[in-house]
Image (cartoon, rainbow, N blue to C red):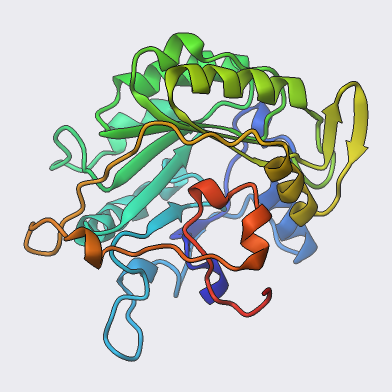
Amino acid sequence: MSFLHDIWNPWHGCVKCSEGCQNCYMYFLDRMRDQNGAEIYKTKSGFSYPLQKDRTGHYKIQSGEQIRVCMTSDFFLEEADPWRVEAWDIMRQRSDVVFFLLTKRPQRVRECLPPDWGSGWDNIFFNVTCENQRRADERIPILFDLPFKHKGIMCAPFIGPVSIRQYLTAGQIERVICGGENYDGARPCNFDWVKSLRQECVDANVTFCFIETGTVFIKDGKRYHLPSKQLQSRMAYKSGMNFQGRPIHFDLVDDWGYPIPQEDLYVPHFRANCETCGSKLICNGCSDCGKCL
């Protein structure tokens, strides 16, 4: 899994729960493999990935890396309740790594937190999906009421205009990501929505990242079909929408609870193809898979 070094999927499969799930990419990719995305199971070798070590005895995931969790499921999925305690324990052990959690189920979060949570762990970056205005207005107030030290939102798939200006002024949202929809039945992403959302983030000095246009992209009244995800990412980068806002600082510590010196933290490195990628602003860096320059 070297080419997926920034993804940890402790379980796989999900239950659709909102508009953004309609054309779920995970369901599409599973169908291509003759699998059923609605089948939920704990992964075998993947479950312990953050604790796995290389031949030299060092963790495969280095101190300071940011790892995306449950990209083929939802960390707060009800069906995953039997496995979540063990997953929390892994994140507790790796207090030197940032774990990016994204959910469409913020209403379940409080009851799923570990008993020693307190005001939150500093290595957890909690995000909610806001695919349209309805879900933004539903989920962001819940996000604000939850005890996390780092919070963000993800407007993907971006299937309708979203205004979050009223929420950004509260100062809790540290980063906003948006991107269009892909694969079968992809609904259009309108560049006007992207520009409007970006301006709200700029005004609040909050980092904004436009990661991809999606398969169907509307700009200046014209409809574009972009089946290649690499092309989508490159077009998102060329749009000039990405904005670096105020810094986000994670207080990462070692096994003994001591702060890790900055010089000992992972520094992402990039190759030629990365320079025009829409996700570079928030990326964990090249995985050295050998598939590009």
